[in-house]
Image (cartoon, rainbow, N blue to C red; front, side, top):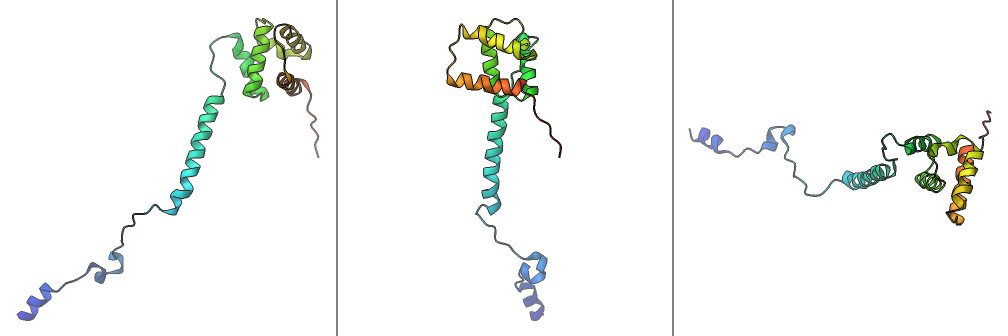
Length: 143
């Protein structure tokens, strides 16, 4: 009887029962994956914020809506859109999208706006880039 009493009081560790019951110490440190994941999350959030800030504002049924849609279709940057808006405002165009019908319409609007605006080198460069983007035919060569 003494032997059965000692067996009952014997200490059994969980790790002795099976390999599946091994005790694992809990670590208090951040795993290495987080050090890689956090910068990607920060960069992703920054990219999303930039895209939201850079997109064309939704306008109602306004004359500028067609111009903004055409700018997006041609891949014109935000600074190019602002320059086209400024030219259209200074040239007092009722429908700003008319500038994009052809080079002659664009040049007429730029000339009319130049009477009120003083174009600096940056503006001249931006207008030249807009001319190339909008009116110069791209060479499509197939190999």
